[in-house]
Image (cartoon, rainbow, N blue to C red; front, side, top):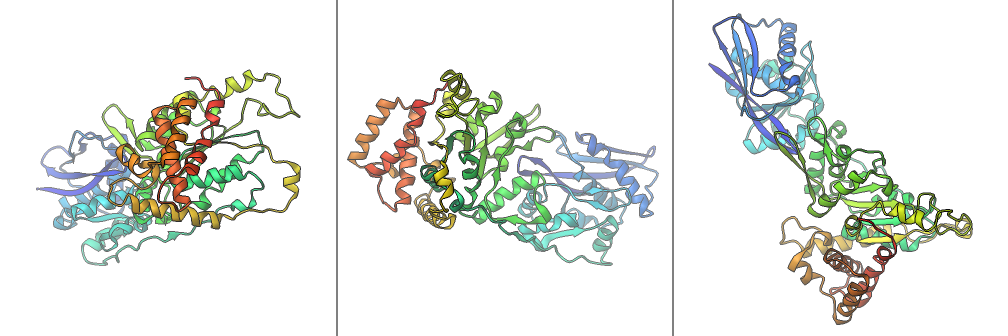
Length: 507
């Protein structure tokens, strides 16, 4: 007789069902796991043996073979412990084999039979629900998995508790979903003195999910502005929150099973590696660009990042997904993020400061900003200079709009875009529009078209730059609640690309 249980193998945010087969056969006593297991899975036999011994369950003097099917998929992770133990207990007639065969299980076993939480409970619950199976997991993973189908999630603390549940001695109550994580409170734009043009660029970027580059001397407020971007972004929709949470579940970042409606805000250090930014390493974990999915990726000291890291951003910016290539598989992660970069104008940062003259001007600025390649620079929709704030402005009381006021306009613009793209799959904001659809929704009036033509010729814009101008102009029109793109909207969009003609770039 072959007893069966099910678990999952993670391929990006997708959880692929794996059948765990256990057979007891005559022969020399042995416990073997086959089906392309990695080291952690192979060691599961010792953890399972010790956990069953702690419950006074002796293994029979037979040959125990556990097969993980399909056998050509690499099995990684300690979450295979629990399904292996359940299949073995079903083979020993301790658990009802019919019930075990209708469950997807994941969890690590300690030597005394207690369950250790693992990552990936949310995508595993999605896979189990699609297959019509129940999910068995450690108790700390229950609130996370219960967001999918709470009635069919069994969350236990130990193997003994799970045995009592399946044998009817002490049934467990269904798990309850975790709490919606409260917004920790974003910083307010009202605190930023001056920098009105940068604030406007921030608003446009938030409304259309446009990539933005800020260039200015140290202390001019670039990081301060970026930190306040989260306060003007609309909350995640239900589908966006689930999609984002699945990535964070794989990365082990969901605390106590809570799901947040706040958009992710990631700010890796400029010493981060390619694997840290794009994804990879053991298990092909998601990188910062995927953890920022549906949110913001802020890269401070942008030219200081290694050239290899910067160039890997080019394709994900265009496609909205990244493929982590491995020897035996290609793992795909979504990464539709808003890139906000900040840079000093030169190595010392004071290229245009008359009080702190740069000794190596202008080559200092050319060499420093030349670290950003032309193709990457061309992908920034908005480029804004952030000048230093004078003492007179710092002494004045704070003025201007609060984040609440700006967020209201951004929300109205996002709502207009949601209605515009309602009939188009995978299109949510203006930054996603392309081709004939973009020409249709962002077509400027005659005066705006003439302005766009002159700007394209004089600035030498690429086809990518041309289309990005259309997208930004459409977003500005949405903020203005205008049905059509007019000349003032196009003029403002062009003004935010003028710095591209002045900033040297080397490919």
